[in-house]
Amino acid sequence: MLKLSRLADYAIVILVKLGEQDGVVTSPALAAITGVPEPTVAKVLKVLSAHGFVLSQRGAKGGYRLARSLADMSVASVIAAVDGQIALTACVGGRECDTGLSCGLCGSWDVINTAIRSTLEGISLESMRPKEACSPVPPQINMLNATHTVREGA
Amino acid sequence: MLKLSRLADYAIVILVKLGEQDGVVTSPALAAITGVPEPTVAKVLKVLSAHGFVLSQRGAKGGYRLARSLADMSVASVIAAVDGQIALTACVGGRECDTGLSCGLCGSWDVINTAIRSTLEGISLESMRPKEACSPVPPQINMLNATHTVREGA
DNA sequence: CGAAACAGGACCATTCAGGTCTTTAATTAG
DNA sequence: CTAATTAAAGACCTGAATGGTCCTGTTTCG
Image 1 (cartoon, rainbow over the protein chains, first blue to last red):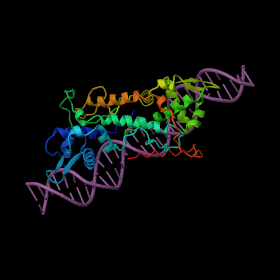
Image 2: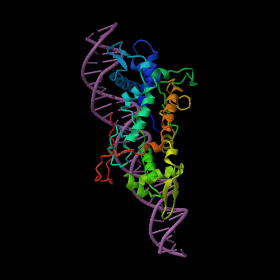
Image 3: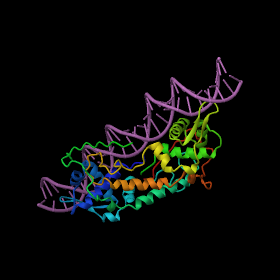
Image 4: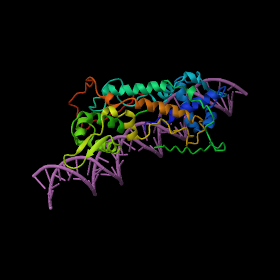
């Protein structure tokens, strides 16, 4: 149902959380904070680093920190970095589909794609910050082996 | 890359094409028109029928026709029918994620979800109709085994 | 010199969407 | 009344892609 990839989801959460810390933060630390498994956090961070969202510092006492403020990062840019081009369909740029379909709708998809893209551009990570406490999640939950029961609400 | 499911894609193409025909159209006929394999067309049509987008007539001389005009069908409604609820993430409705993540972003995702949804609501199938001829697709291509090379522009 | 931590890539496994097939029921034509 | 046509429904299989893990190398600090 038009869903975001898990990695992109993580990326946004990680960036927001990273923005709340000060100083450099290691990936294991971020894993503990977010509940996302360490290797995955590391992977996401690497991508974010490559795209200039975070600055990395190698070696002992190294870690990551934001490259710029959350207000300067749009949801669209993060998704694009992690998942690639934001587009609902393969028909991008007014070209004909590379499927053999004679859909004839060609350029029409572009309307949708750009609409979605600009919608996402308008939302900054800053606006994703939690406002009020909304999580009635019991604080005792064991973050280490959080079971990750990602069950989609179909 | 936030992509639409193939079925939803087909559904839109099929509806638009169906709107261009007059009288009832059989699924094999629609398959020929769109280039989508027959069984898949039939499957999509069944879903669309169940959701009231098309009217079906069984038996000999049967087929499908639009239940209402293309202008009265939003892209959002078609996607919702085929793929289910339009939402980028599992966190819908301000509830906490059912993952063990302490993301704390809870309600924030809702902003994105509703933004996307309303964007898609604003686009009708009528506006997806091809305006000018845009397909330089060679007419000799073999539609039967169209390879469907959906290669994402990463 | 050794430990800590990022960098980069390869790799495996699971999931799920896409697609096919079979059977059943309805409607029309002859 | 019978036969042919076509939609309805659902089971099932296949394959691609995402998600996740691990390994090796390199840098930096104590």
